[in-house]
Amino acid sequence: MYDHVLVPTDGSESSTRAAEHAISLAAALDSTVHALSVIKGTGQSQRDQLRTDPESEARDAVEAVERGATAEGVSVTTTLREGAPADAIRDQVAAADADLIVMGTDNRSGLDRVLKPSVAEDVQEHATIPVLTVPNPA
Image (tube, rainbow, N blue to C red; front, side, top):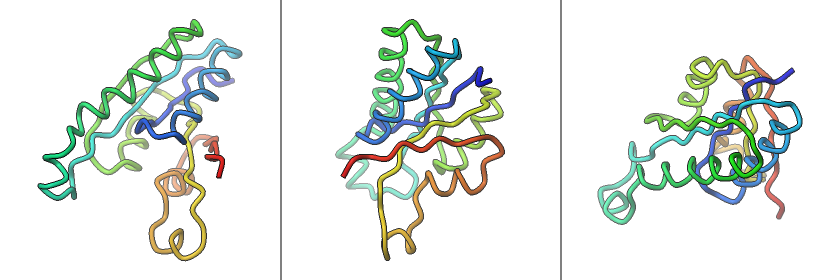
């Protein structure tokens, strides 16, 4: 049913929980996990860029998913992309021939959610394949 499971990750707690779900599902269905991390940098201030290495953080995030999948005997690929996260996720759906996206949510509500919709909401709204969102416990 789901042969290629796309897991966007930024290394956060919510994306780590989503990756765990994706790996369990892929193990049960004999699917391939496609770990994706979007390199941040666009829109960051120079000061923030000096304090962090966006490419290294993205690489660390996909490598963590890779280690988890490998430990469970699940086939895995890793990809780094630059750009807006929701756009990069949609682009990777086609590139990986994904038939399911598993991603974390950050449980925002109220005015914060209205003023700045989450990447998960954007992906879910425009996805052409099923999206499984994994909530981050409060």
